[in-house]
Structure formats: C-alpha cells, structure tokens
Image 1 (cartoon, rainbow, N blue to C red):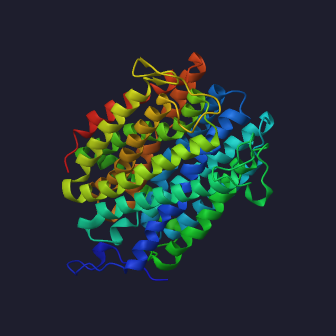
Image 2 (cartoon, rainbow, N blue to C red):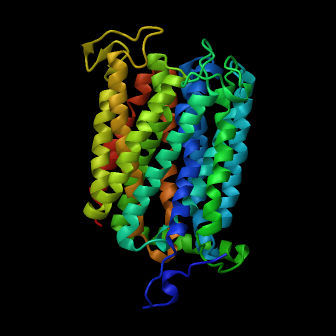
Image 3 (cartoon, rainbow, N blue to C red):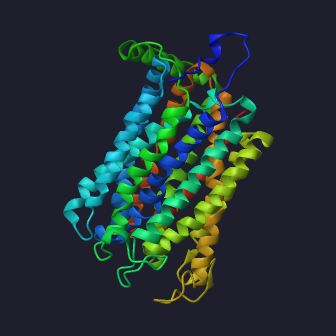
Length: 461
C-alpha cells in the first residue's frame, strides 16, 4: 500500500500529489456513504418510520429527533479525540474501515422494522443512531485525506465534486429503491410500474425496509476503490503512544484556539448552521409526509428532484469556492436556506404564502396541487444551497487550520458540527411534542441560520 508523506517531511521540496485514479477513488467515498443520508435519514426510512411504525407522524418525528440527538452527542464527544489520535498515529484508512463496519451492520439491522410493531422501535432507533455514528466518524477521517490529494488552489473544486458525486449516488440509490423495491401498498407497483424485485411485500413495506441492507451493501462496494487506490498517510507510532500524544496535542489546540480568532469564529458558526442544516434535511421528508400525506413514492420522487438540484449546486459551488473563496459561498448558501425555510413555513396543503389554493386530491396526479409544487420549488433551493454550504465549509477549514493537525481539526470540525447537533433535533422533537404541530417544530430552524450567518461574518480568510 502506497503512502503520502506529510507536507512537512521534506521542507522546501516540491509537493507531489497522487495520480488521478487515487483522487477519483477518494471522491467515491461520498458516493458510497450518501445512501445512508438519502435513503435512511431523509427520504425513505425516516418517513416510513414516522408514518408506519410510530403511533403517529408527530410522535415519530419526536422519537426520531431524540435518536439523532443521542447520536450527535456521541459524535461530538469523541470526534476531536479520535481525530487527534489519528494525527498522532498517522493512518486514516483503519479508522474509516472500523466505522464503516459500524455503518454497514447498523444499516442492515433496519430490515427488522415492521409496520405497526411498536416493540421494535427502541432497537430500531439504537441502530439508526449507531449508523449515524459510523457514517459521521468515517467521514471525519476521509475528509482529513483531502490536503494530500490536490494542490491548495484546487481544494474547493475537489470538495464540491465530492459532494456532487455523493448527490448523484443518492439519486441512483433512490431510483433503485423507488423503481424496483418500494411499492404502493394499494397498487402493489413501484414508481416505474414494476412489481417489487425479490418478491418484496408492499403490504409489510419490505421495499422501504430494504433501504437499510442496500445502504450497507452499497457502502462496501463503492468504498473499496478508496482502500485500493488512494494513498494513506504513513504510520507514525503505535496506537497507545498515539493516544497519549494525541490527547496532549488536542489539549494544547483547545488552549490555543481563543488566540486563533477566525478559526474559532468559524468553528462556532459551523456549530450553529450545521445543526440547522442537518435538522432540515433530517426532518424535511417527515414534515412533507405529515403536511401533504405523502408516502414513499412521493417523498422519494421529491428526494430525486432535490438531489438533482443539489448535484448542480455542489458542482457550481466548488467552482465558485476556488473563484470567490469559501466564505462567500457559505454566506450565500445560508441566505438562500434562510429564505427557503421561512417560505416553507408559509406553505400548507391548502395555502401558499397566505394565498388559498386547492388541496391535494386523493388519488390525483403526482404533485398535482399548487402547494405541493411550491414545496418542491423551495426544496430545490434548499438542495442547491445545502451542497455548497457543506463543501465550502470543509475547504474553509483546510484554509484556516494548521496543516500538521488536519485530522484533529476535522475532529473539532465534526465536534462543532455535532456538539449542539442534538439541540436542533431535540428542540424540534420537544416543540413538536408539546404543540402537536410539525410546523411549530420546524420554525426553530430559522434561528439557527440567522445566528450562524452573524457569526460567519466575523471570520477572516
């Protein structure tokens, strides 16, 4: 297995970068991991859980929020520690493999989620939380490989291309589930008009439940090229020594962070706006299911449309990142998200921005109602802005963080993305439970984007 020496190894020597195949293989990590976010947390399993397993959609949204909050707390507490240890030990791939295995096993477990079986809710939520931990930690160490792959002036394009590739992977996986696995219980047909493959039963929602095993298998297949062709950092020292040194380095970095004002301001801003974005994506499908009565096919089609918008947004955002700088891309993306969320709160099944419209007709054409079409347009804006926001955030970190501690700072990046990530889902869950209103629960997201934008303005590249 080839390795790449750290930048500081040969001071003054020209930097060399791996071949194109290594970079493409790294990009495919985003493709490999995306179905967890697309199929499980957003468009297939989460809405299925809320509408068919939980007692009612509001309770389902609340329970799902608590599970995501628990996962966020675990990620927040452990990510900077693991990143610091990885910097001290050198290698990234063993960590990606370990947490990828957690993602695979936990995702496959979701197959047990039968409709109406309330006894299965606790183990399902535990599996979802573990899968989230696996996906997020694997991503931390994959992100830390970026500076060794391309020159600094191409980091934005690399990050944006990775996000765009991930969105395409999400689209393909969603088409597979909707077109060949998940069928309408009433008609027994998938979105493409087929009977489900492998004899999957529409009545027991086996097509929706198959999203879990498909996510695990997908990850195994498409992450393999990264392990085969993308160089890793060289091993530095044994894990025990790395543990001691990594924790000491982390302690010193946290002590020095207040002196790095722009980096500290960015991490704080990332903490706020990432919480809002993750909560928006996590509950967007559930919110649509409760507002319009959408089921898997409608929500999945909505997801495909959003992912297409996200693909173009991430690709364009990567180019703008290198041209304008990541801070401007983040700020613009946040403004679009803020306005879109505010508008979505003014869309109901029989009204759009205070204007009364005809509600959806049962059995009518797909997205035939004006309110549904308005929701899709706003969702496309969210999808197009979400990709550049996340891609530009990781390139801004690379520009601000010390190069010899990049995994540690990606751990802190994950920390700030997760340390309060339980607050968004928790607030949505609590407010939804107290008010019995999904709209009231989602309204809290406006505060996150406004606060994140204000903090970002204090960052100097």
